[in-house]
Length: 319
Image (tube, rainbow, N blue to C red):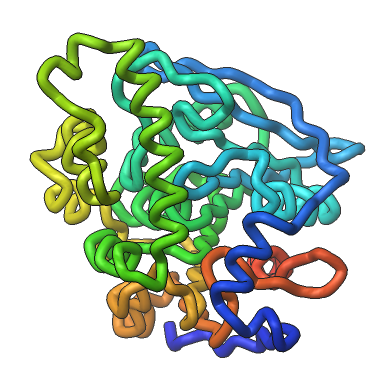
């Protein structure tokens, strides 16, 4: 499918990628969504918390929303997506990754960029317990990588799943790791690391035996964190093995569900490989839109409805 032309043209301040990213993450507020929480068990005796938002009159359509690294269902970009879906007759369920719902999860492992088994568990639970004819999966950043990987890994996609939408996706994890460690992204990297280290300290209380002889204070970079914890807790050899096996990029060519990928050209987290132009041109189901502006999960637009939210709705309605 040829590249999708983008018509996103924000106000002048929001043409700056960093301003767009920071405003969306720290300043934007979204009201008008009331969550109902459901806790489900995973096959390995852990739990995942789901935050549901239902339309007033009931719906046969559902949006599954996945947050990014160290996010949650409470992030404005998740609530904004839930709100616009609700306004257009979609129920929504926002998945809190393991350990991201305000309570430490029960197992030593947590979540990571390639953990599609957890998304699959959520989808299976929904299909078994609820009756939806049309399901859309929308993921942001890490959640976008999960969405793309889930759709392209080769599993049989349940018939109710009609579309995927992926926003600001580091689909080549190694390349994005290199970008996040550059000076331009230092404030973001430090914030991510601080939050991840805090959770690792909780794991040390829960599982002290694993930390014998291991020093958390030796973690200097995000790659160090992935070498120390992410890879070891989730069955990878090291960080590089994790980046290779968890990336969605190798699976994009196999996606057979209509899927929209929106990555802004001024997203400072993304490497050139995160703009898979050639793959999109050869896969009729993958629609790649690369706006000039938007930053990382930015996409400011008027009336507090962001471009990616309106664009996602239009994409689904056009199918």
